[in-house]
Structures are given as C-alpha cells and as structure tokens.
Length: 302
Ligand SMILES: [Zn+2]
Image 1: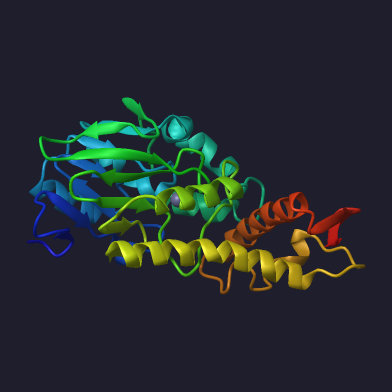
Image 2 (image 1 turned 90 degrees about the vertical axis):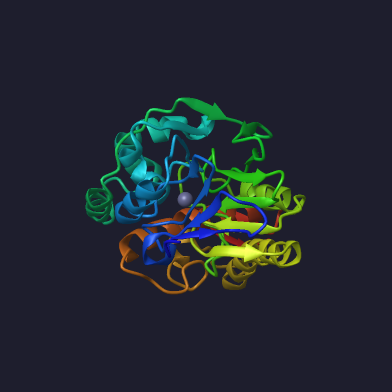
C-alpha cells in the first residue's frame, strides 16, 4: 500500500489515514478515508491526486471552512459535499469572506494571505447537504459516522465518530503542543472548552487529528484531550501573571510575550494578529469570572 495511504486498523477494513504533505503541517492537513467518504481535502493536490488514482471518492465531508482542510475540494468536483450549517457560508463563499474572518483585512498580514491563497488555489465549494450534531452519516453496511459538533475553533467545526470501529476524526482538536486555536471572527473560547469536554465522553479507540496524525487507545486519547484543554488554563494563568493591581495592560501589550505563540514561524505577521484576538478572548473570560477589571482600555487584577 502506498505510504501516504495507511490502513488505520487490521480489524476494520476500508478506513484509512491519508497523510498530508509536510507531515500535515499547515497549510496542509491529514485526512481520513472511510468507504467512499473522504473527511477533509487539505493533504495537498499531489497527495490527493495519488489518492484519486487508488480510490473512488464520491463524498467529501469538510470538518470546517479553513483553507488547510478544503483546498483540495476543487479536485473532487463530482463528489457530494457536506459541512455543518454554521460553516456553510464560508465554504460556499470562501474567497470573499476568509480574510475578514481571519481579521487580516488592511493589516500587515493581508498580503501574506493573498500569497497563501494563491498557493493553495482554494475555490468556493457548493455544499450539497449540511450535517448536524448527533446526525448519522451512513457510509456502508458496516460503517456509520456520528457527527459531533465541536464549535470554538470555527462555529461549525465538527469531529466524527465511527460507531462500529470507534475510530474518530478530531480535525483541529489536534493535540498539538501549540494548543487550541481560536483567532477567527467565528471562534469562541468558551465553546471550545465545552467541545473538548464533549469529546471526553466518547470511548475512542483510534483518533485521527488533522495536524498531529494518529493516536491509539482510549486512555492516551483522554490524556491528550486533557493536555490540550490545559493549554487554555495555562494561558489564563500567564496573562494573570503579567497583570498588576495598578497599571492597566491591553492585549497589544501582551503580544509576543510567549503567552500563546511560543515562537514565530514564516507566518509571523499573521501570528501577531491571531495572538491579539485570542488574548482578547481570555480577557473577556477573566472579566466574566471577576478575576480582572477593565480600566480605560486596559485590564488590572481585581
Ligand atoms: Zn482550522
């Protein structure tokens, strides 16, 4: 079998891990193939062409609207497309909305995004059917996928759980050391926390994540979910450590202080914007929990 197409289990046939280019690092991501359903298409056009030569893909489920998960949709034009209703507009009208949703319009990251979108050649995708929380997608006689709506990363972000094999696709709840990302206009920190809690209730034997590959065993997967969730608390704590009782600080003051982005990549111009958006979400949360107070435009400890 091809090295980018790997069976996920000896026991359950026709479920494959599809490796993304650059080992699934952004702007690519891993996919899962189950029967003739492919979850996400961000593996790269090269990997997708290879996959198409080996399998027929009649259905595509997009876990959410982000470019690193749907750039390959254009190569599967004859397939039926599915996504959650809350992400539908962004999948169908990606090109005219994405920069606004990433909060990069008229910022130093605007050009960076243009370059990235040129590289990925994302085309708008017409969705044939929306999916919803707890909905069941009938794949074949043996396989049924349960949709787990997990908002927070995007409003319509979904994970998927195959009931017979207990194999799950967790998309961008990806167990990366970076932790949860919630820097979109449709991101939501408190929803993200609830979504991770929701996943912990499932008995998952094998988890495929979009950027960190495959994880085995319910115990290890639960531990990874806990570690991933703990990143949010660590961020809360380090923000509180920077604040004082007298000198108000804003999210701008806390950019590049190793709170969220521990190091910068080639997308640094964007990472500064994302960090600010995420810091603001923490400020809102801390304010709600009465741990901080707002003075002028900044925050102090309460
Ligand atoms: Zn994403």
